[in-house]
Length: 63
Image 1 (cartoon, rainbow, N blue to C red):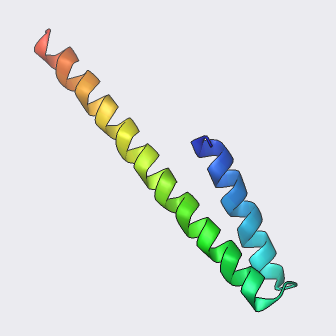
Image 2 (cartoon, rainbow, N blue to C red; image 1 turned 120 degrees about the vertical axis):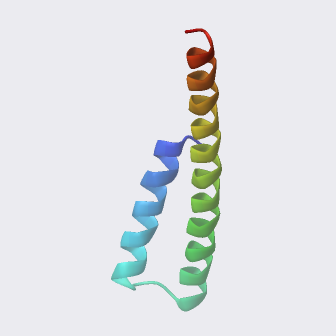
């Protein structure tokens, strides 16, 4: 799942949780799903940041 798709899913889950119209066990399941998606997003951001830092380091070395 892409970063953007994960963020959209997290937002949808947040809206569902805010409405509070589901049983507590389903709410807990959705919360776990959102936590996992957030973990994946953090990993994707870390990887992107690392790639940018490597590009910038390579770019500054060639100057």
